[in-house]
Length: 417
Image (cartoon, rainbow, N blue to C red; front, side):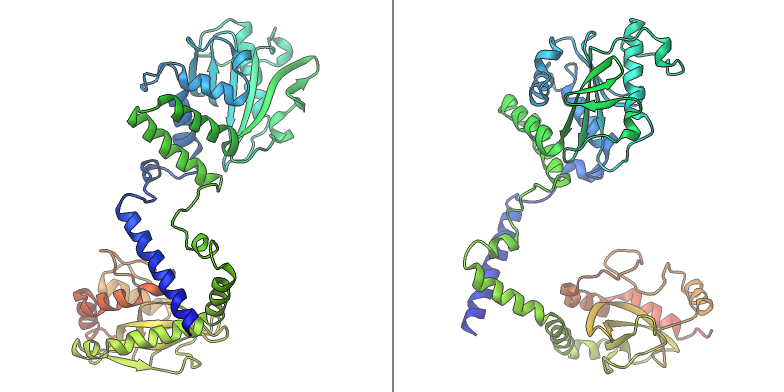
């Protein structure tokens, strides 16, 4: 047992240290992710990339970010002068469009979305057609004409296909164009092409840009948080407070032996934990007007034959009506596994499988938004099937102290279906 004691001391020390790091600012907070999903192509990624690349952007760094980007994707010499370049988002539906009037870069940004029919072909033809008409940067739409009807120029166009990991666009998106080395080719016409990735070129661009802005704090922070997002979508973010990393750095064989032993006994450990918590709160449970009901974990309560569930530990009101709310731990009989815990409505005969008609009437009667499980951690009712078993103790206390639960049970005393 000595090695187990030592193991748990190490884990406890790690968790305490991790908590200190969190309090000192080592956390997973990211302002971008408070507004958008990490995979939001348009509002997060394309918008930020455009914002940084645009020489006229509010960063007031001119073409620094654009030059750095062109270096990372290998187009700096080809593109030429960046001082008068313009960067557009969603111009003619192109995710990111970069031009200096002579050279034109199309960036097709793909994170989760699939390719669209002839998407890249349409973008190429649009830019080529605009060149032939010597139009301004607004690129008036003229997609109705066919390529044969144009006197189009392709030599000054480059297409970058951007994805989390490097991959090529589908034939579905390319249409009549084919990938041939560093070019897309359609008959005698060809445009430059490169498949780039967030994992390589974009991360490199962000890091190089951070070096370029140096001590300009707000820009460095903006790049830092964007780098964090990119690392999330490319699975390259290092978790400095990862317990898995901690356990595999030193004494790995001994640590893993203990971990696997714990995993083998996980359900028995959870069962013992649940019983211990209930017993620890026995006095408080009884003083609050509840009682502990213990049933065999192999005995079903209700008609849940499909899932074969039982409720071996339940805290129910001592004085209740035909229907009542109880705090219980749920158990899968066939799998010998503890699933979760929460607040569920029961009948006096412990049959929780109320038919839809009765449950609907109870919902209307109580005037709450409720189906089966309740989670009272916030000021509204919601499902709680994914509740962490580690939070059993704190949520049991909330149940016992809940004025809402007490009021609902009092109201249910007067209800008869």
